[in-house]
Image 1 (cartoon, helix red, strand yellow):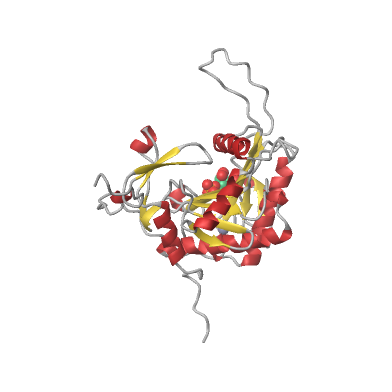
Image 2: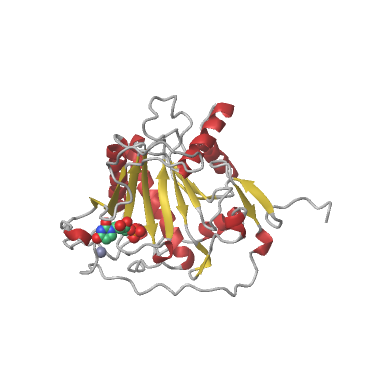
Length: 356
Ligand code: H2U
Ligand code: ZN
């Protein structure tokens, strides 16, 4: 045993997340362990195309009394329960270094992806997904004029704590740089200083050359289960051709290619366990306010997809115990997860079979 070569597909090891500097414990030998824990209830029947009780459907009333317009494709509004407020007085200087606190200002918005209550991004056609891409870009451009960090994200599925199946995402924009992008900023900057190239542009080339973890690709984008993935079927979506610091820098054809690859990867997600696959996804790009090419030379735009499911539609992964107290851990390797996502079709399982 001692002389056998180390095989990371069989033996415990740790991988370093090059984007955050954090380590993940990988325990592939454990993937076959029996499961006696809880099961999620199987997903309910598909919702109606219009739900009179839904606060996101066209024409309906929201909390606080505002009424949605009869929108035809996308619709953006200020969150009625906003987590950030645009105006706040400056906080007093902390009176003890252990009790540090600062004022934060910002805005929260909700984006309806479609007037149809029963759709998801995976079930929308490419033109409709492209309209969502355009809204993400327009909102990022507008909010980036005022706020340092613009977080575009989608929380999908009851498993992710999403309250409503109506296809929607959110944007929170504020004047602070939050933890995750702050770590990514530091690690990308460090790599750029050492290597002279953006970390994620090098990473995209490396993954395209190795092919082990690539799930989908087109002329402008690739999606991989990252080498350092924590969530079983986590994906990282990256530009492959050139440095793109933020969403608004995408060309028309890169936007179209983005809509195409998004649909393909989300259909694969749904097909994996034949359900509307739950996840949190969101975009990271260079913070605003760091202007000039030099200040953002280390940044590459990317999206993260974090799905909570482990090995079936009903078994979810929890980050608890060792993971809360020591470090995060996964069982199946990222390479095995990429194989499984590559093995499923790119035609949605719910799509009716073609006429013959
Ligand atoms: P989820 O994506 O987590 O389900 O959140 C939907 C958002 O919609 C949530 O942030 C907001 C909630 O505050 N909301 C409104 O803005 N108006 C409403 O009438 C209900 C929910
Ligand atoms: Zn609805």
